[in-house]
Amino acid sequence: METENKPINKPIYVTQPSLPDLQEFLPYLEQIWENKILTNNGPFHKQLEAELASFLGVPFISLFANGTLALVTALQVLRITGEVITTPYSFVATTHSLWWNNIKPVFVDIEPEFGNLDPEKVEAAITSKTTAILPVHVYGNPCKVDRLKEIADTYGLKLIYDAAHCFGVKHKGKGICNFGDLSVLSFHATKVFNTMEGGAIVCYDEATKKRIDYLKNFGFAGETTIMAPGINSKMNEMQAALGLVQLKHYDENIAKRKMIAETYRAGLSHIKGISLMPEPKDTESNYAYFPIFVDETDYGMSRDQLYEKLKHNNIFGRRYFYPLISEFSMYKGLDSAKPSNLHEANKIAEKVVCLPIFPSLEHFSVKLIINLIKGK
Ligand SMILES: Cc1ncc(COP(=O)(O)O)c(C=O)c1O
Image (cartoon, rainbow, N blue to C red; front, side, top):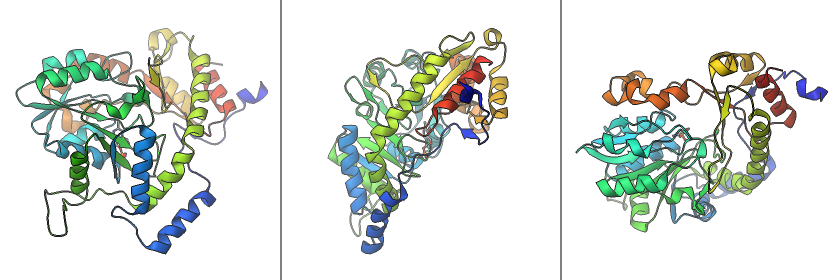
């Protein structure tokens, strides 16, 4: 028990990137040095696409240099224009991808249970200019996918999921990226599966995969044919090679995350003023994040006071997602960004702190974080 209250001398951040043993990665580097293929759909890139499609249980996947470029490209793949309905409760790249395509974001409030876009509020925001819905499976918890599809189908809208948080999540017996017209993943260093930087678009037919692959390579559809003003957002061979090694360790990493999440859940479930998100039904989680929500009146301390107290003890949680995207200067002027339109999102953004969770986080550190929150 003594070790549980031992002070933490080294800072613990909200996440620490998982890396394989360097020795395991070196043969892949040697192969790259040997064959001199560094990018442009090289052998590791092809292999990772095949392995990920099978691992995620999806028909087609196209790898990208990062998730943001994959989002920007996904909107071009489906020729999205005009207005797109999206959530303010996400990482800013979700909305920036619209801005980069000259599309007007229309923010719709979230449902309080999981912090995902509230389908019941989507219809009221649809106009003659709306072409798509861009929800986010926040923290890896699935959106209300059936209801969103029903709305998208009724109004003839495309449905593109920002699936940056939910690598490996399964919902209703299938990979989460099987919902919607396209899903976009991030393999950033902070994600449960990382290629240092990286991302992907998941699609369901070969023609779309072809279009994605042209668009991420300047629009080249042949040696002398350019089919569109594409961009350069290809994943390189080093990233792809790292992905192949990381994939081998995915299950063990998720098992460790699960244990940490269970320890937090058991330790923090009955503290007055602290609430947790429920575990999503019919879902195999990836335990990417562990958000807690602080009610100042009941807890006797504000979220920011708790956040500072943790920091003072070398525990660096993150207030994901605060401020809301709709509060940033480039979006604040939009009608849909008004706090009166985003009641739930504003409420949870003021209460949230994400606690450290990563495979190498030690049990005694988790216990210490719990004790600090309990006020011990
Ligand atoms: C929800 C969400 N969307 C998009 C991104 C952007 O991905 P990337 O960092 O790979 O560009 C991130 C995070 O990194 C994210 O959390």
